[in-house]
Image (cartoon, rainbow, N blue to C red; front, side, top):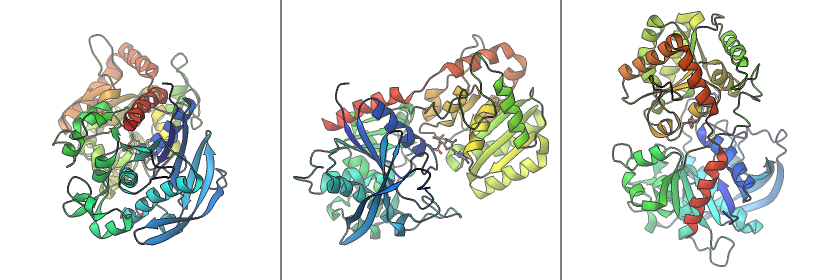
Length: 487
Ligand code: ADP
C-alpha cells in the first residue's frame, strides 16, 4: 500500500513499560511493525509510577498541559521516550496514575476512579495533538479504557484544528471488559447527555465505555477472525453482539502477530540454551532448567505440561483444576503452572504442587522470565479457554516446539491445526466441548502421542516451529482497516 498513515495509538498497556496481558504485547509490537512499513506512529500511555524512567530514558517533553474534563481543567505533564524508534508519550497525572497496579489494587479491587482515569487519558492524548500540532489520520483506540476516543472525535467540535479530519479505529482485545460504571461519572467525561442513550453510552442505566466506542468508531476490529464471528452471536456477544452486527463491514477480525525478536528459541534472552528446528538439542537443557526451578524429578523423558496465564474464569483453569488430580494419578506426566488472579485457584494449584512435590510445580505471581522458560522447557502447553479473543501463548508455544492443547475457540482455533493421527499433520491438539471430559481425554491423547508415536511428535514439533504469525502480515491488515476508517 502506497499510502503513509499518521497514527496516534492510545493504550493503557504497552510492553515493556506496563503489561497485564495480551494488550500490552500487541501495543508493544504493532507500532513497530507499522513503522517498519513506513507509517508515522506514536503511542500515548499513562505514566504509571512503577515505570522505570531511567531505564527507558523517559524525559520531560511537554509541560504544563491543561485538559478539559467536564467543567474542570486537569493539569498534567507529558514525558517521552523512544521504543524501537516509536515515540511513546507518557501522561503524568499522579492523582490518577501513581498507583501500584494498572486497574486494581493488590486485593484485585478495581480502582473506583477507573472511568475518570481513562477518560482523562483519552482527552489528554487529544490535547497533546492540539498542543504539539500533531495531525493524525488515524486515532487508534484499544479496549474500553480508550474507547471514549472515537466518541470525542465524533461529538466534540474539532473544526479548524489538527484533529478535524482524524478517523478512529477501535480494537477490542477482549469483549468481556467493557468499562461499565455508574452514570455519576458521566459528566466528568465531558460528553453530551444526548449520547447517553441505549446503543451509545447507556447500558441498563450505567455508562458502557466500549459500547459507545463501538458506536462511534469508524472501524472496529478484534484480534482473530473466529472471535470476530463468535462475538456477533448472542451466545458470546456479551450483550454487544447486536451493536457489532450493526457495524457490518466496518467490523472484522485481524489475528495478532508475535514479536519474534522477543519470543524465539534461537535468541530468547531468558533461556539457558538456545535451539531451532535443525538444532533442537537446547530444548532439553531448557526442560531440565525448568524442572530445576520447580524442584521436579530431573527426568527429561517424562511429558512435561505447562500453563501460563491469568487466573480468571475465561481461561478455563477451573476446568483443569477439576481433573488435575486424575491427570496426575493416571498419567506419567509432570505439570507446571505460572499465574495469578483468583485466590481459590491460586491456593488450589499451590496445594497441588505441595501434594505432588517432585512432579508438579506452581509459581503464583507474575514472572516474564519464567513464562519464557515454561514456553521453552515444556512439551505441551495447555489453554482450555472458555473463550479466547486471540491468545498469544499458544502462538509462542508453536515457535518453541511446545505443542499447544487448546479448546477450539477464538484465536486458539485460528492459530492451531489439529493433529491428524493418520497423516501426522497438524501443530497441536484441539477439543471443542468446554467439559472436563473433553479436556481430560485431549490431554490423554497428547500424552499418548508423546509416548507411543514419537515419529509423529517429531513431525508435529517441526510443523509447529515452522509456522509464522508475523506482525508484518497483521500490520498490513491494519492498513486496510485504517483505509476503510478514512473512507
Ligand atoms: P490475555 O491477554 O487474556 O492475558 P494472552 O494469551 O493474549 O492472554 O496474553 C497473555 C500474555 O501475558 C502472555 O505474554 C503471557 O506470557 C503473559 N502472562 C500472563 N500471565 C503471566 C504471568 N503470571 N507471568 C508472566 N507472564 C504472564
